Length: 342
Image 1 (cartoon, rainbow, N blue to C red):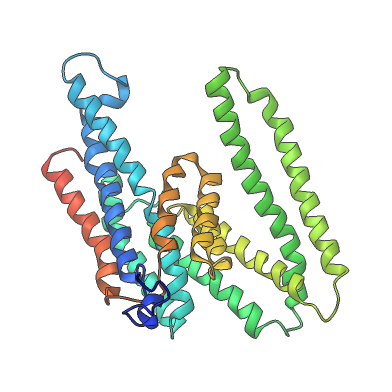
Image 2 (cartoon, helix red, strand yellow):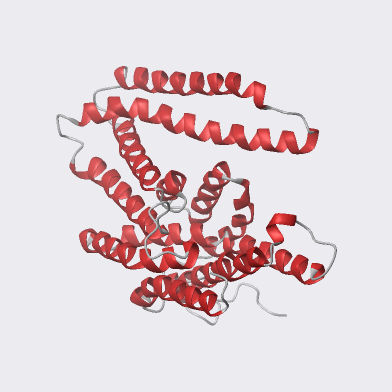
């Protein structure tokens, strides 16, 4: 009879490293992003050139081909939703393990600038389009927010001006509650209108007042908690200071109109806060993205590779990973140009 208590034939160290290394996560993220961007550029522009979006589901002529292309386009965009939470998770891991945060931030900034022209060409057909900025700007702002969190918790918590950040953080927390609740309201209203056919517009002002009330109450509760805190316990003080930093990042992303904007920065912050448990980190990011928009529903599947992450770096793909973004966007632009759909 086989001894089920026997020691496995492979060492314990190997067992600990089972799972997906960071390089595999990068390749998955790149792959789903490419699928998404092919749909968002080539397929979307093909359908626009054929006049599909002006008439909706067709019934004659090239109807079958166009309807099939639209269905494929939708599926590819749903697959692409996995990309951003994976990039956010990798950014958090990069922040935690980098030995030089300054160089990391500069590198993100450089590639944000390099990628902007290919991004504008691929998605807007212009060399410069200031109405929407590429995702590297969102990642850079998210990185700076995490750096701010670390500075507060490790290096600045004894500074005399920390209470100023903390008091401002009470208002910042209220702002986050207001923004999130307002997005939930819009989503719920859209669902109700879709199912009932009723116009929800008259109720919106009252809903907004309720949300403002929730935000004010949240801010006041946190402010009272801060004022009543034990002088030896600085957790609430640091949390509120972090809220100030986070709101600054959210407002900057909204001002620049970056990809995923303020909710992208909030996603990074939540995943950073939950970073010690990868699957929980992925779930937290997923929930934030769905507060932003229910079009992110399929991002739930990103939790699978994130949960399988084994903490190992894997292959060295740093610059390939960065360079792929502007290069593939420029190639997609050239393809659209050759097809005369841009």
